[in-house]
Amino acid sequence: MAPPYDLILKGGHLIDPKNNIDTPNQVAIKDGKIAAIAPDLPDTATQIIDVSGLYITPGLIDIHMHAYGGFNAWLFPDPHYLNTGTTTVVDTGSAGWQDFENFKDTIMDNSVTRVLAFLNIAGGGMTGAPEQDTNGMSARRCADTILQYPQHLVGTKSAHFGGLGWESTGGAIEAARLSNSITMVDFSPKPERTYAEMLARFSPGDIHTHVYSTRTTLLNDQQQVNDYAWQARQRGIIFDTGHGNQSFYFHIAVPAMQQGFPPDTISTDLHRRSRLLSNATMDTTMSKFLALGMPLQEVIYRSTWRPAEVIRRPDLGHLSLGAEADLAVLDVLEGDFKFVDSTRSHFPGRHKLQCHMTLRAGEVVWDMHGRSFPLWSDCLPY
Ligand SMILES: [Zn+2]
Figure (cartoon, rainbow, N blue to C red):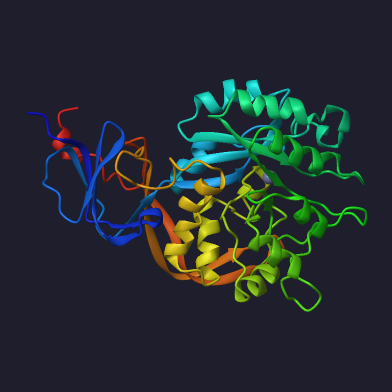
């Protein structure tokens, strides 16, 4: 008789915000899917892994990163994400309709991490300077590519546009409507096109990324969250973190969080320049929100189920029975930690998330301390 399960994670504390679970639980996996969750399961599995003292969560989802698009930006997803518990990433506009298929063939189809994308309204994506080339912007072609690849593309992207008009942001919004999807915008306002007007042009579900950057005016001169931001949130506009190199400032995040304006989604905007000094990895970015006073359960929610909802992928970000077994096993370290923002100053914190183990579709793909491996002397002779 074959054991009923392939693998059981035992001894952990499960946080699964979609299913309202925040209790000690065992998780059983069969054929890459969640097969059972209960405080006590019979020890009937091919492999049992002890994760006592650690948290088990759905695999993390980062809806803003760069896995393509030229030497200045991109990072291969697997070595920068699987070791942080992140199993799904959404590349944000690195490719446009002209180079999407190359992105898919080279990176998406060859990564263990699930790689999705927002398609840039600029035809050539972020390679070179096509984000300024309004001739390459075609809402129709952008939308048609999204409709052709619904399993890979979740919406459109506009970013880094320096022109005075609405060609980029307006085109990305139009392409999102044409493809029945959403847009994510990185906005650099001009007197001719303001942040408030951008939010007004959005439909519910559209995303402003870099919510705590200095480019846009989340706060007024009295350090209060502007009325138009509250109103946008009330009608369903999404505010994303998009930490990055130049887009996360504690002097904006602290008052905004104190006034009850957290980001909907925690994301990194991870790329070459944000990887080292600001260390905007998923686990570190989440730790910054712990330091800012966001409870752990909410940090997990805004890194799992909430981003899945935002990108309209309700199959992801939770551990319901039958869901793909993407999981993170996390520790919350205690100590004196320092977290760096885009000013290169630091913010102190007492807790830091550390990923011990990551499972993607039921396979252990990261195991920091070898919990899933046998004792060396049990394996002799080699
Ligand atoms: Zn970005």
